[in-house]
Structures are given as C-alpha cells and as structure tokens.
Length: 120
Image: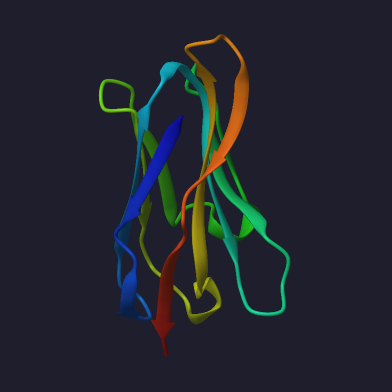
C-alpha cells in the first residue's frame, strides 16, 4: 500500500557530509511521525532522529549538533543531513514512516536501508 524509497548513502571520509532522503508513496491519507534509525553490525537498531507531523524533533545524543532531520510534507519526504561524520556513524540507515492509509488505519513502514560508511 505504501512504498518508501531511500537514497543518499555512500562512503565518505571522517568529517564529511551526506544527505539521506526517504520518499513515501502509495495509498497515503496522512503521514504522522517520520524518522531515521541505524544499525551497525552486531548492534541493535537505534533511533537517530525523528520528526512529528507538528514539527517536534528528537535526536539521539550521539548525533546532536551534527545531524539535522527535516521533512517536506508536499513531497512526503524526510531528509537527514549528516555533517561532521565519524567512523562510529557507520551503519545501515533506515527510514521509518508512520502512515495513516486511505482506509484510515495506521501502520509503520520501513525503508529498505542505505549503507553509510565513514572512513577514518
């Protein structure tokens, strides 16, 4: 019913920047919260940043001051601008979108994941 397409991952040197995008499409009535999670090998998936429909934002302590989450409601897209990247930011990044579909039921949808690798 709803598809998420992520883009923007890649390989970057420490101190560099990347911008991730996640676009939602399909049977969307409304989009509630949007967020980014990451999972490094051997670790649990963790919240990186989230933004509600009202614009409230939450960041993991480890990325505060370096990452910025934003959303374009007209495009059903969420972004993650990542600056001052560190090797410990290396992970697969997943977007998560809470969507109320046209049947008025609410679901969580996950993107396919995009690899971010930061070299030292």
